[in-house]
Image (cartoon, rainbow, N blue to C red; front, side):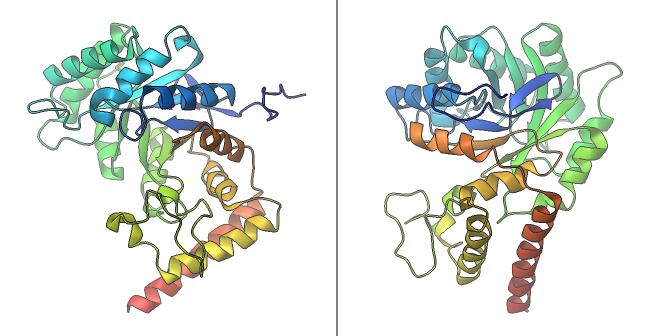
Length: 327
């Protein structure tokens, strides 16, 4: 019988990222230090741990470095209960960015200090650096692994070609990337074509971010209904442009599919991703304890192969309609 969590949900399923074992729903920490202050951060972290979420994914750049700082404070005394992932490479300040070996060492020291820890479980290159040979970056990361400062290394926002290039650049016996963190959802499926096959070929775990397409797949946005206020999408041109008739039609079909099975759209968004064997953990942000608990609950639904086929057919049908409308 499964262990029960304090609020009544069965224990979270686990999958592997290299040598790490992680919950199939991870907590994206990009709101910490930005939309959330330290007290609100603690509330979300507490709820995540209580719900069985143990993969916490942040970056040095999130919240102007405050995401790491807040996490370090609120995790004090319970660091061993989480798998801590962070990222480097994006611009933190003038002169502090990229993947040069000397900067990798500096960025790692800064993250360790802010996170109040002696090691990072998964240290990820946030984005490719075209000015630095990937072999040089991998060499610096290998030093960090040998020193015990990092357990596993990963990458983010990499294409299939860049994944292959990194795999070819690993020195004999040296650590290699064990994961790639890219955007993937039922509304953004680009990585299905090349990146997921590259993950299979090179043995990488895939960590999808924006699994709910910044909220569009939560079920809050429905055809013929007023837009909810105070959300990430409403009033934001980057995301509001996706509130098209075609996307809203698709959402209605997906809501119906989930409802017929006693589920909601948010459950389907997670289940569809977790049906892909390359996916180790779905990285989902949260701004409240209630939201993180709901995300954790969504990780429990396991689609049958027939259900996966039916959802993919729906997605393909709507995609072909959209392509036809553009011609």
